[in-house]
Structure formats: structure tokens, C-alpha cells
Image (cartoon, rainbow, N blue to C red; front, side, top):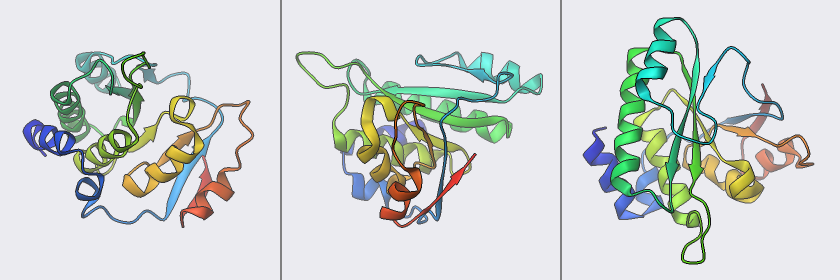
Length: 179
């Protein structure tokens, strides 16, 4: 997918069309602990693509962030997803993409529910072999559960959250696999 195609998908704000053609998932991986210590991880902010590329050249896996929603335009999101898709084609060391909605404000929530699903589907369309993870802390269990049908393939459940991943996965017709 090109950046323009990704931008158009996001701007259309149609989650059903965005998810059209996606293979139905059979499982979702999950964990209550973060990534391995030797990974380059963006955290909650988007890291530089060249830093990810350099880590890959050095043999280090990475986890990238895509910010969307409040404070981020569809164009910015589309360009970021396209750049990460290119990086994923260059190396198999992009282990996951963490989708992080903007911060809530009095004028706008961090993201709209439809926006969460469309961005998830766009990331999955652009990066079919990369783990796509919605932000559990900002979206909550129900939205992350629904996001599986739109291409999410992993949940990072906070250690203090007592959600039952097997129950949540079963409810949406997939198997939960601890990683």
C-alpha cells in the first residue's frame, strides 16, 4: 500500500471497508510484561525510522509506535504507516507496531472508536506480517477485543489488570496465546 492509499483509507473513516479482504484471525497473542530488554522500543512516542533501520542493521529487533487521533492528521498517520511498512519489507526485525491514540482534551477524545478500528485495519493492510497492537491502557479491554477483527494481533495487558485474555479472545472467536 502506498501512503496515499493508507491516507485515503483513514480519511474515509469506514472500518468495514478498511477491513475488507483481511483474513479472519485465529489467534491473538498476549502478555502482561513488555518486550525483551534488548529491543529498540519507541515507548509512547514515535521514534525515528532511521533509528529503527540502524537497529535492524545491527541485528536488534524493534517495536515502533504509530500515533493517531487528537493532534495527528490522517496524512501524518498514513506516512508513518507507509514508512514502517517499507521498513518491514527491508527487514523482518520490526516485531510490532503499537498503535497509540492522542491524548484526550476538552475538545476531542484521544481517538474515536471508528478511528481506532480504521487505523488498526490500515496498519494490518500495510503490514500483513507484523504484529499490530492496540493500546490497552488508553482503549481498554472491549476496544482491544474488537480490534482483533480489524487486524490487531497482540495485547499487552497491564500487570495490574485482571482481564482474562482467554475469555476475551474466545468471545471474538479466536484463541489466546501467551507469549
